[in-house]
Image (cartoon, rainbow, N blue to C red; front, side, top):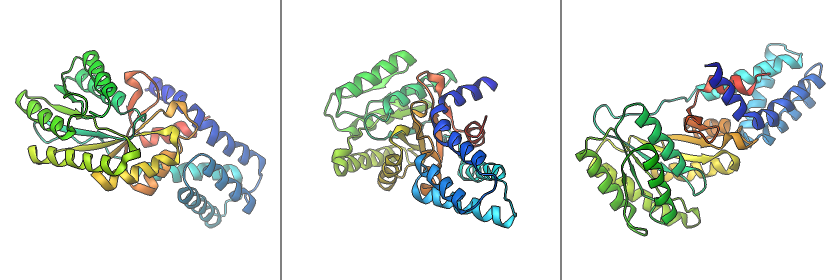
Length: 305
């Protein structure tokens, strides 16, 4: 467990530097809290890409608590902030959903470049390592490179990949994949999708069609619609989440590239503004660096010395 904590701490180094180092500097620079202290706290939260409404809400909560509890020492405010952030993150935590029996279908959505295909590959390797029978479906038929990349991950993980030629109907790929997975007694089917937001109307209609086909073939599916978001995009991640949730009812977030950004605070804004659980986080390139999100651990790492 200590090793996992250390790996997450390493992955969140840039976010901790952007957020916690500034808060520590603020706390040590103010013996007592006053209006100027809270104005600066709000500004720090905004710079960490937590989002305007969430930053304002957090600052107001901490300000009210400090007043009601008659707290004047700045150091005590840091502890309050951790408690408030933890309550946001823990309040909507949820594990990956699995079918009660038989095949579990997970639809993976998100814009190009967010890390969808890599996430699919890592999940396939992880589930295979857990003893599950896994199948991948190359539903991003818009890009030949996406199909090839998924095939590479399939070979690496030792799992079959259902594909059609470039430009094929993604819904047809989904149909064949569900039929094949059922026929072959698979435990989990992971379906890739296209992510070209520049044609977002067509894209969303395409993904809706894929979703309908999956449901038609297996009434309880998809059991998860996981939205892959790139943490380095900060507030853009929240707008993407709103768009995809409206289209296909996203059930959870996979937040990638946390190790390469100072904008990891967006995870707090996603939870607060959208009410969507962050189910997985990526803190590195290795397969094991795609981890189940643990809200308490995340807050502990964020506020650790």
